[in-house]
Length: 291
Image (cartoon, rainbow, N blue to C red; front, side, top):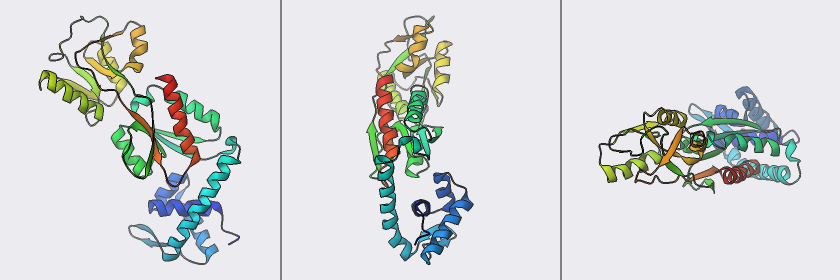
């Protein structure tokens, strides 16, 4: 028992959670051989097998199932020490953050800067995707924190609500004041997103099915299309502010008000991880300041 280390228990918990050494290694920022070595070392220290290795993955043995609750308690105690005793500068771990493009285009740099200020040794990986994919990545534990259109309705997930993002209509500054949405292409969010579905439903109700929508996963492309006079756009007001101030775009009333976007900073609640919780609260503070 003297050779049983906290890192062995952390790796054990990750393998039990993911059912796979490779996925656990990725989550812990380890090589697969290192993760395998830790599990073997733990089993040698305990004198018993904790996993059955099968063609489909790793499953807990009866003794492994008994160990699971004790390992979770060790992890919780470790997190409490890290939160209440350790200097934040000493936190050295990987955090995988998934964000929607709206966030990536607005306050993400300030958020990452604040995290690095609070946790100087925190290693951060960022992925940008649509909220539908980010939700699945979080539930599969492929990201630790997802900042997305939320909240996520799942009993395993904790959500911190963020300030809503206002959508407005933009057109090129040189275009005429009157815009007929029945004949003017409309640039907006990607097809398989909530903003696209909600906007399309409102436009269909008002103008019928003959409108032309240009959905895109790139908000930058949407703004470029609007600036070039190729389309009008129902897009985030905060992202278009600088282009309006530069005289490239103007806001206008299209007679249909796009619904605001409601975001959340979402993470798996158990096992508790105070660094991820702190990051979610930091996201809330930064969003409130920037939007």
